[in-house]
Length: 392
Ligand code: CMC
Image 1 (cartoon, rainbow, N blue to C red):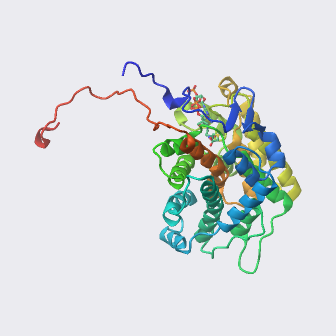
Image 2: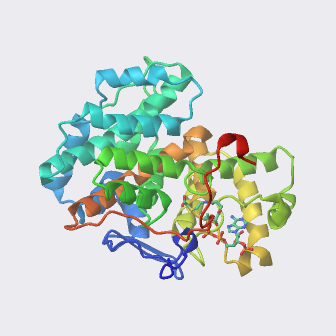
Image 3: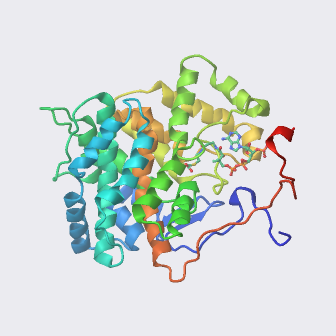
C-alpha cells in the first residue's frame, strides 16, 4: 500500500472526466453544459434544463415537443405500484419511499432498453415524470388522502403542485409567481458535478447497474443532513431560534464551540469558497416571492440575522464559509406550502436530470472501468484465531 495516498473525503481527487457541469469555486461560477446558471434560472423551464443536462444541448421546438409528449405518456405509475404505498407506515419518511419506489421502477419497466437513443430518451422521461408522481403520491398517502392524478395540460412544476395540493372537487391552481419560484428552485438543483449523491450514482453505474437502481442509490446519499437533508435541517435550526430556545447569536456561538458538534446548517461548501451563486439567486427569489404573496415569514428575518452575524465573524470568514444553496431554499418551499419533510424530496426531483446525465456519461463511455478506490489499512497486521472459550 506504499503507493496509495490518502485523500480524506476525496477532497482532491478527480474521479472522472465529465462534460456536464462546470464549477469555479473561487469565482462562484456554475454552468450547465457551458450555459450560466443565472440565465437558466431566469429564463429556462426545468424540463428544458433537464434536456440540456441529459442530452447536451438546449432542445429545438421539435425535440422539446417530443420530450414533453414522452413525459406526459410516462407520468402515471403502473397500477400495481400503488400497492407499495400501502406497505409503508403512515409516518414513513418520503425519502425512503422515493428511493424504494425508484428502485422498484426497474421491475415495472423491465422493457426499458437503454442501448439505443430512443429507448434512453423514453427511460429518462419516465424517470423524470415518475419521480414527481411518486413524490406527490407519498405526500398524499402520508395525509391519508386519495392520490391526485397528473394532468396532461400542465407544465412540470405546476403539475407537481396540482398533485400535491388538489383535493377531490377542488383543483389547486398555482399562481405564476409560485410556479416560477418552484421552477427556478428545480433548475438551480439540476446538477452540481461530483457531489456525494452524483458520485454515488456514477459509482453504482460503473458496475453496469441499471438507471433506476443507480438513481435510487443517489436518493439515499442525498438524504443525509450534510447533503440534501440540509434544507430541512436549516428550517429546523431557524424554527428553534424562532421558538426562543436560543437567540441567533447564541446559536452561532454554539456552532463555534467545537465541543457542541453543532454546525451552521446551510453554510459552507467543499467547492465554493467565496459565495454559492445558487444561494445568491435564491435569497433574492425568497424576497420577491414573499412580497408577491404579501406574506411575511419570521424565519426569513432570522435567516438574514444569522447570515449577518456569521459573515461578520472571523470563525466563518477565516474558514471561508458562506450560505449555500440550502440556506434560503426552505423559505421558498415553506411559502409555497410544502412541508419540511418534503424539502429533500424536492431537492431530489431537481437533481434527477443531473443523476440521469451522469449515469449516461458512465454508460456511454467505452471501456469504462469499475469505480474501485483503494484504502489505507489501519487494522491488526495479523491476528490469531482463538477458540470461543479462550477469547478475552
Ligand atoms: N458550520 C460550522 N463549521 C463549519 C461548517 C458549518 N456549516 N462547515 C464547515 N465548517 C468548518 C469545519 O468544522 C472545519 O473546521 P476546522 O478546520 O476547524 O476543522 C472547516 O470549516 C472546514 O470544513 P470541512 O469540514 O473541511 O468542509 P467539507 O468540505 O468537508 O464539508 C460541508 C462541506 C458542506 C459538508 C460542510 O460545510 C457542512 O457540514 N455544512 C453544513 C451542512 C450543509 O449545509 N450542507 C449542504 C451543502 S450544499 C448542498 C448539498 O451538497 O447538498
